[in-house]
Length: 298
Ligand SMILES: *[C@@H]1O[C@H](CO)[C@@H](O)[C@H](O)[C@H]1NC(C)=O
Ligand SMILES: *[C@@H]1O[C@H](CO)[C@@H](O)[C@H](O)[C@H]1NC(C)=O
Ligand SMILES: *[C@@H]1O[C@H](CO)[C@@H](O)[C@H](O)[C@H]1NC(C)=O
Image 1 (cartoon, helix red, strand yellow):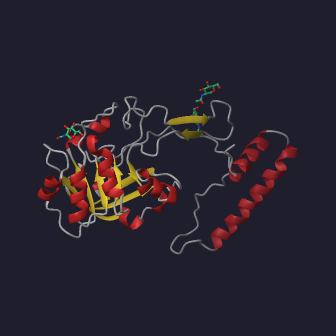
Image 2: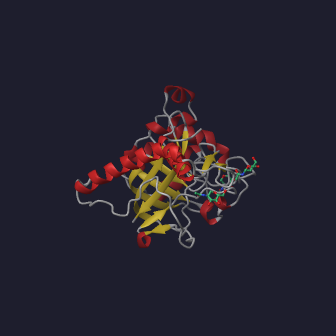
Image 3: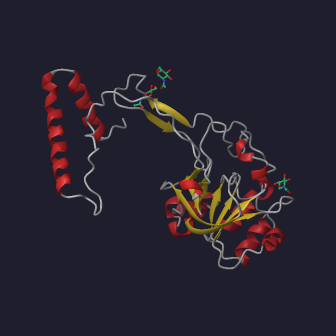
């Protein structure tokens, strides 16, 4: 069971409202409690600058009628284009590494109101830790790091958040040492998102995994480590390493735990330049990868 105490209380409450008066007792106490906290809140705001929330409804309240069903808005940009979402939304036909199937059944309604649950709807996720826009931790390719606990919960938020450069990679090559040299990324730049032919080919929008995607060759990864201050590398397909050198490239990046890898970014609608990047993986202890929400701020 996934019940939280709050929901249990709510269930008790909604049931008792509908049924025998004897059962009203627990609900009565709950409402009393809520009443008490409301009184406290109205005399002493919990946060300076914020008054009491007059619209707050008790969690146990029974909403009588819903207004006309609103249509949700789907957005890639927020606040007039100041905030750009560079994460892919999860969907069944989102490609997965070395799979032709996409991401089927990633979201399942485990308990639903239509199916007899009288409380709420609860969905369950079934995903690899490297699904969609995600980060890799050192444990992804190094057994000793995996065993030592270098999971996504150990990744540095100061690296995952801060100024970032979005660059366009020449479209006729994988990311080699020569290509990197030609990009003239200034010293001191710590985060770079590499947009490639993958974006032009809309590879993240094709369900079937495509081995011909552009990524780092081993010599490109090594050149980056040896010649730049980059600590975060972002790419626009499922792996930072080109398919034929996928593991060697990962090994170079993660060997000294110097670089955080962010993969499968959605760079369709952004222009090259400098932004503030915010990338927040889930705190999955023990996991060598995690889905992440990544945004750019202009
Ligand atoms: C729960 O899901 C059902 C579909 O099974 C839907 O009709 C209903 O509106 C949902 N209820 C809530 C509270 O989201
Ligand atoms: C509802 O329950 C039936 C029978 O157990 C099941 O086949 C169906 O998939 C369930 N639907 C949802 C939305 O969970
Ligand atoms: C990049 O490398 C892959 C193999 O890993 C290859 O199929 C693809 O053609 C290369 N792309 C370019 C633009 O050279």
